[in-house]
Image (cartoon, rainbow, N blue to C red; front, side, top):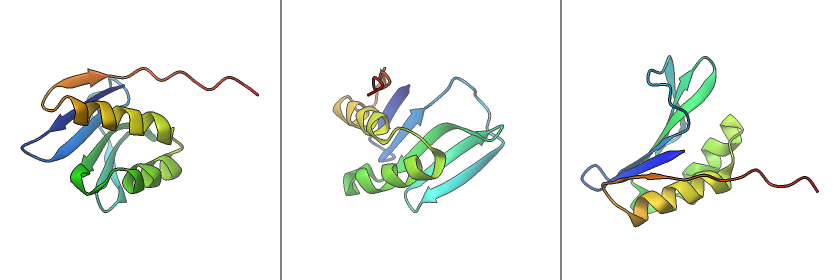
Length: 96
């Protein structure tokens, strides 16, 4: 996944897939909007990450069946390199 923190907008964009156009948007949290295409989440916009990312990311993950830890890793990487795109590759957990 790719992520970018726009310091001027104070927002993080996390691209979940390369699909460019959404069918609709879902406000999964008051500071998180998910773009949907064909019933699947394709991008996440997290507003005001300076107010914390854990709560909105948990809401998005629960609502859309996404990996909360992977989203947190992408958000942290984006915040660490403001105004640049970062790529994050998070492997699936091995079966127990």
